[in-house]
Length: 152
Image 1 (tube, rainbow, N blue to C red):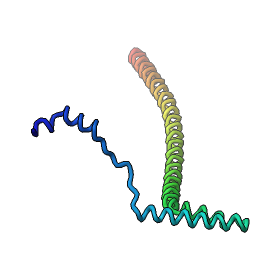
Image 2: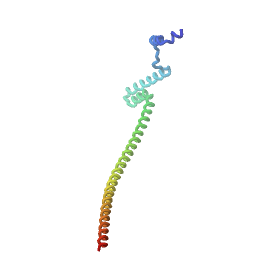
Image 3: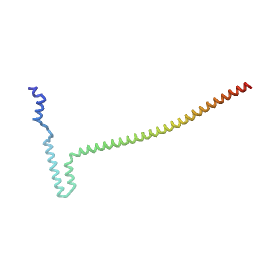
Image 4: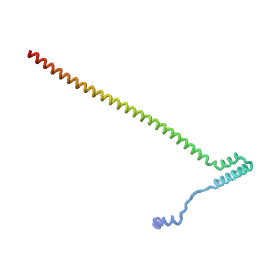
């Protein structure tokens, strides 16, 4: 018997035949409270219409929407937090942007300095080569003079 009740086919059949799902519940206190709120709202609207007083009409709507005030407060709080986060993220973005610009400027300055130093290094290397050639020529002249001095 247990095997028959626990089989998949039996479960599927049970679900198809007896699908009971509670979609909501209303307690008697909630229903009574809603009725009382509706009656109060109707009375206030009646007085507002008779006296053509918009303040009473606003009060009637407020009585009906009062449960939403907590939701609105939570939404306002979330909105404030999101605005704060957005400001912080924007400030961070601006800071990063400034740092990137500064780094790029530093890189350009360093590249220019490197190019200048490379050029100066090349000039000095050429000067050293030129001076070494002149020294070699002077030594050759000195040797030639020594040879001609010995011959004389």
